[in-house]
Image (cartoon, rainbow, N blue to C red; front, side, top):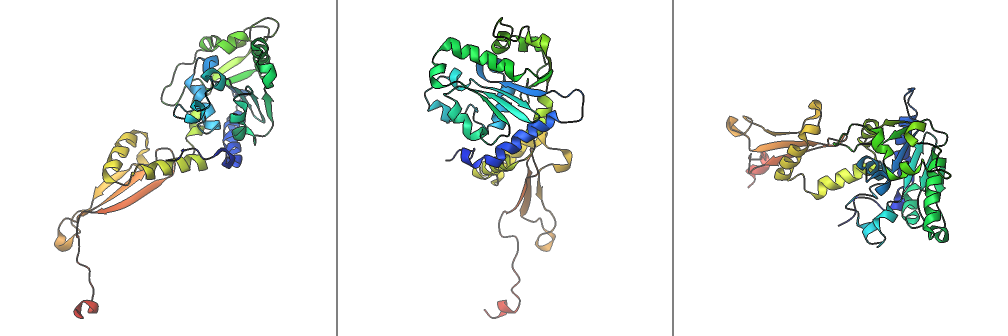
Length: 298
């Protein structure tokens, strides 16, 4: 068994590629485009799945529920999830703590213009200092923004965007605190917009890591076995465009003496990218090979 995610040190150009894909959403020629895309993990977004999905895209599944790497650390979930990411067109702001910093670093070290907001271990031991630093970091991140995109919904679970629900997220509520906050309610100071659909389009693009994961999943689950193909096709059929439908075809009237040929061609097409695989199945001896003069020698 091996992880579907390659070792972090193999990520250097790939992490930058995915970040650029997200940043391209912010550079589209439209007046309605946000100045940044804001992502909170864990309790700070009330465990919003859209935020988790964006983090997993940028960090190659680090926060997937089936990732055992975090479980082996023994640290509480609220410490490992203590992350804020703000993606801007030409920079990234990342808040984290000294515990999860070492886990995040291999995935983000090659990001251009990365601004870390992180306390030292000694400073982080003081809970009040740590909480104030987190809030002030959040305020500093968004200071020069006017429109902020929120990854509100995850793929397949579209929710009606409600900025008042966002206002109830704990870290967003803290924005209004006097003295260390942003001098007012977050949703009154900034225009919020849902960028979920734009993000889904980006997630669907094939890149080296998603291609590797797809090929690994297809091969290791023996998708080329007919029964597996049948189930895989049934599960994914509704996601595939009409022009690239997978098929199973029994060729007829082409066998010996115009009989039914005993073979089948099966093709599977990935619903998420350009990968397509075909295979021919023979159900028995379908022909007698012609050996010509060689046959007369025996």
